[in-house]
Image (tube, rainbow, N blue to C red; front, side, top):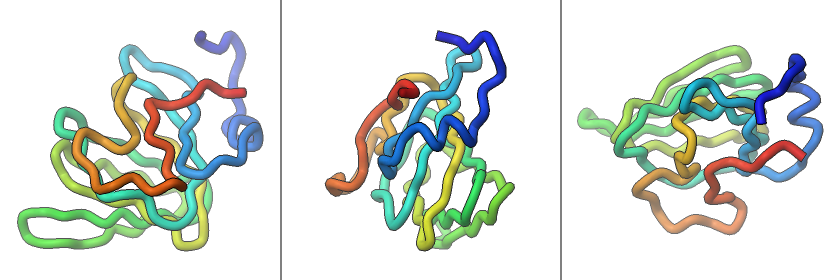
Length: 131
């Protein structure tokens, strides 16, 4: 279901209101390009077999990381990118809300391969089609 015309990310984001519920805007080879509206905290999770790429479209995203040297948090203002390496436990947090673009292999679950209990406000999905 590839678009035959350019797709406005702003229009894609305006087409839904659900938080932590990514929408697939296109695919590139075997990778999904997903957009999501986020606010508050996601869940600690890890993707054992793939890196996870984040681009902040609007707002600010914090990503807490559990690394061998300990825990740290990276702060991504609008326009910033960050890649969480495969196997790294992480928890995205958007204290004031944000819009993000995520790039990862098609079929990758939004809560990873290992995760804490998934709260009701987080959609455990491989991405939804745009409305």
